[in-house]
Amino acid sequence: MKHRPRIALYEPDIPQNTAAIIRTCACFGSKLEIIEPCGFLLSDKRFKRVVMDYMDWNKIDLYRSSEEFFEKKKNQRIVLMTTKASLSYTKFKFKKNDTILFGRESAGVPENVHQSINNRLKIPMDKNARSFNVASSVAIVLAESLRQINII
Image 1: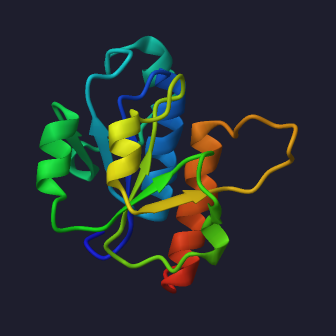
Image 2: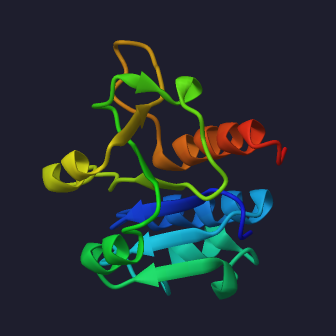
């Protein structure tokens, strides 16, 4: 897991999405990073129902705040997935140690976070659509990043 892109969730809102992302990360062998506060408790029954037996605290890092997260990542490349980006994830060259950041389901990331990250990507979609589900977005982008670095 040391040389695979990591997935980071910025203050996730929906327990079922976070649980599905844990399963995706487990299946692809990537670490998940959760930036708190979450909009739910990790003991939530909706979370536990979806995560099943994929929960492994050795493969999940929790950050008590975005400040703690960004301090830890200050010398690492962060890639923000956002509908506000102009560059498609398929046109980007992922690296093994990237952290791919996804915003809250309800609000994305704050503008100051958005502006502080140089690498902002989007998943192209129909012009009438608003956004993909975050769990689907993680699966799409993580699979492409792993394909590019010849992991899958």
